[in-house]
Image 1 (cartoon, helix red, strand yellow):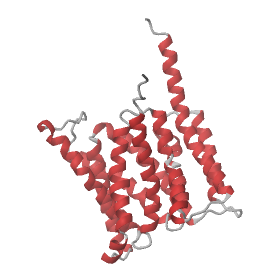
Image 2 (spheres, helix red, strand yellow):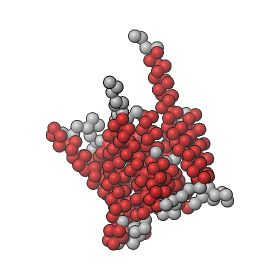
Image 3 (tube, helix red, strand yellow):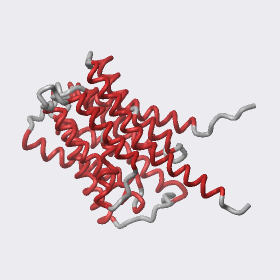
Image 4 (cartoon, rainbow, N blue to C red):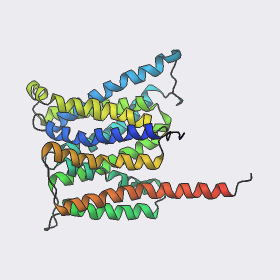
Length: 312
């Protein structure tokens, strides 16, 4: 009798994560009909941080101590780390949320996904090595972005441009998390970054947006989806799934977020794409996958080569 692949549970969780994140772009788009982008982000990231509290407490309550293998950091240190990451999260989320007012959920999903290509390129600042696959993936993604967003007059839509700028902050956010996460409990770090983003969004909304109870009430479902599901639950699913997920599976499944964003925009909001835009989306997705999987393939080949020279 064949045993099921032990990674299927992780793959299923990652697929659900991609679906939640992808359809979350629709919730973000609909929410803009009732509240401003900073008000939306303020509430949804506050909800996201609240969802993590039971997970943080469960680690402390179990057996009377924190089961995390990460060495506990001082309160000031983890708060500073949360503020630093939260600032990048605020910039990326704000540009994305304002941009989505002027573009479609599908465009926002694909353009945001470019951060997976931008991350290794920005890694040059930290003297990280870049493979040929990354450059090929970047070229494919850039050409795809041109087909998706750049007009015949060589202009780019305002919304697409804002989301594109936001992708650089999402990339910076990933790099800083990679630097700080080994030093802190992941759930605590996530809590403080979400809280920081919520606070910064609240301050910005107080200066630039009218905030009304009626508007928040009308946007309650999109806000709840964006906060509880997209921020709180989907993040938790990702953390749990990637403990046992195959890296290649994770790269492919999480990249599907942009595809689900386009499908959800088409199905729920009647958003349409031209043939040129569809080709651009296909190239962008190919570039994202190429950038992610090239390095994984090289690492696997290197490990197999090393194993052949090990003594029996």
